[in-house]
Image 1: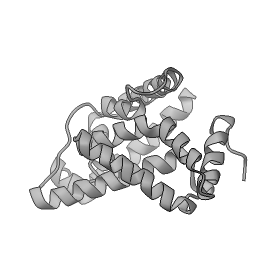
Image 2: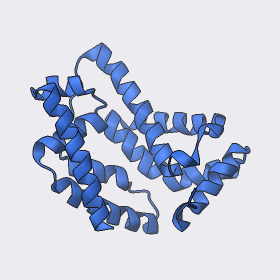
Image 3: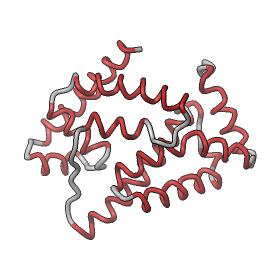
Image 4: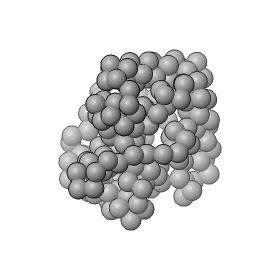
Length: 194
């Protein structure tokens, strides 16, 4: 396995220390990523109080089950984003079962940017997040409107392909194709911007 990039090496060390029960490692991860993770939770849940509770639940889960993290499967931030997104979508699906369809609105590029930077981020983190946000905005703008819409519904809405087809009135095969092509295009665009 290749060593992690130097800017992530500290995160890997923190995850290792966390698995050994180091409370300072948990605190450091929370301080470093709570802003961006809270923004992601709030974007998906549309409720700040619920997003804050979810974030606490995710960090509690991280503390209790730190050994679940596998560095071969991704960076610590990727793991944390996946945990938050998964738990937030679970909550949305639970609400949707009680209240019907859950439909998102807004500009997908702005929605992604809101998850990359929270107002409470330290200035250096905000600068990096701003640069990442610009790259994501350019990549998303390279997609057509339908591709952006289906990615928004899949990523933030947690909708299945068939639910996206129902919400957009597109055939299921078309939805799957748009998602696949959009992800390929995003990957290409982001690679050229690095």
